[in-house]
Image (cartoon, rainbow over all chains, first blue to last red; front, side, top):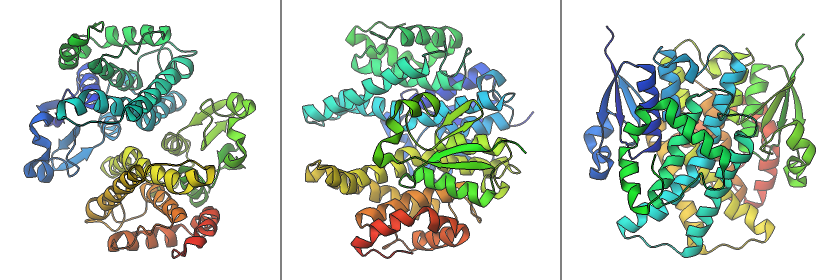
Length: 228
Length: 228
């Protein structure tokens, strides 16, 4: 049996959760190695030199080969035969490119804006960082705009983001949206397609979705947002 | 002969230039269709309904199939047999994943910060938008940080971003860096590896690099930055 790929992650990181769920569903041959970002484990010299020169999670080490960036890791693991075909479908290159389109789109739109809101509304208060109200409001507007694009464009004619069935795009997307619960936001409110989609992604990926979101769900409860 | 893929682009857009150069080097079967962003051609209803629902460039239309997001387009065209193999090498999946790693990394780092500086220092003054000095300074710092990561990490042991030869990663990276000339910035200053790398990317991709940068070079001259 081939040695497992070492998978470094933290459940507080959205793409870390997405890959964790994808690997679980796929039965990938990985060794899970949690990295506690809150204890700055990723900033240690040993982590930089032996795991990831960019000092972030998620990342993998496969023998002496190191790779970072969640989408690059997904593609590497697919070529290594470790990803369930339906999640990143190779049969139809048109369908596959639609999954790629979402995975590339989300960086500077969904991820950028949800991450920015998460920092300003959840992390900054913990760290004692103060921001101007209009900067926070601008960040909220950008997030709403991108969540509306998911509702009105991505989900317009599809039950999943890129078609009629669950792919890696849905898992990455849902893990990002789920993070907004942490600061008391309910992304599904007034977005019926988003609500239905989130429900389907959760049910098709459980128990792993739930497992990966234990921290998010627990930390969200103080906001009384509906926790699934 | 197969009908060409329609390629919609504007040379003012960094990823538009990168794909243009990649298609030219590869001899891809594409029909080039310029879209004038300055005249809001991408915001027309016809463009939205017939070309790209997200109303951005670059994008392609292949028969009745539409695709946006430059990196997704690169992969689609590769699978269609339209990309020169050395630019997106399929032989070694470890080398290919290093190209993917850069292409995924750049979105929220290099592209985000250079684009932000470009908007604040070039576009906003044209549009009459005023920003606080500290916001512009913060943006400049983020750009410098990411350019330093290219100098100190990506180019540390390599003459190109992901190895010893030119790939799509270098072309996307260089087109982004080149944009900074527009606001009088010299990314190669005090970055000797960056300077050597930019020179190699330009010489290996000319005459197409020059052709794609005619506007950038022309508009940069008023800043007296060295234009290649």
